[in-house]
Image (cartoon, rainbow, N blue to C red; front, side):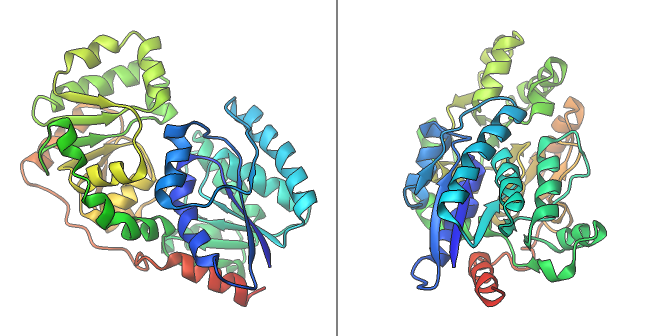
Amino acid sequence: MRIINVVGARPNMMKMAPIVDAMSGIESVEQRLVHTGQHYDHKMSQVFFDQLGLPRPDLYLDVGSGSHAEQTARVMVAFEQVLLDQKPDLILVVGDVNSTLACAITAAKLWIPVAHVEAGLRSFDRTMPEEINRIVTDALSSYLFTTEIDANHNLQKEGISEEKIFFVGNVMIDTLYKHKTKAGSLGTYSHYGLSQGEYALLTLHRPSNVDDALILSGILDALSLIQEQIPILFPMHPRTSQRIDEFGLTKKIKDASNMHLTEPLGYLEFLDLMMNAGIMLTDSGGIQEETTILGVPCVTLRDNTERPVTIRQGTNVLVGSDPLRIVAAVEQILAGEKKQGVIPELWDGRAADRIVKILLSTR
């Protein structure tokens, strides 16, 4: 069985690594790894290959950045030639980035089956580019591997046959379990003069938060108040840094003396910081899942989430971008009022094994 596994952006690496591992050594599987180059610099891509033990990509498409249309189109053109040359039996895509959508469309038009890992997640907000990517990819896929039961229900409501839907668990959690011990030995927080459990870790990159000057300014105001109560470590995404400069908000950051800025970090360093944080502040998707496993309080700066299990069973709360709600949620946690989460079903570190077993048994 000839399979092409596709990665394109930083979040894909954590999801693909356990799948590549699970396929390795199986004589009946010939896998190829394709990196589209959607994230292409060392901090946003290569360091993840190095730390997660992913093999060197068999093919690198080097599509680079651009608008959603430009990036998607470049991936489609380059990936079509890959498919014509390689003639795979199946392509496997993960997550919801532009590369996921582009490769799924290209394969479907060449009658090549698509397997989508992390299928069925829905925020029900079509202003999010990722939501469009998820919906289209799921509609075109022959195998839909889900992380939570809500995703199964979403797919069924959209008319997708139950025969295509497989609840397997969460491959990102496979990666977390595998690397947790190594990450926890790094003591990364001490490099920034911080103490275990006594700092907040922040990620902020979503266009709805950082591309609007008024919203971004309000979030920074909230963070300014929070850092007076607890230090904040902020690995800043390049997009966010650029917007802060463009909108003339640099002074807000500089005046927050208890906010520690750093460049994007590798997977192991960030996992270490997340494991030892007192609070996680984020607008990411996957971090909501990781904090649920780690038992770390997570304050999500979004009005919705495609991962409702992290709220229903995990440690996650949604607060949107309202500065008052952000500050109030943090103060509640600092006062000792934390959600006590449980580990969701099948988030046990064996999701990738289930995926490969299903692909081989249903071929």
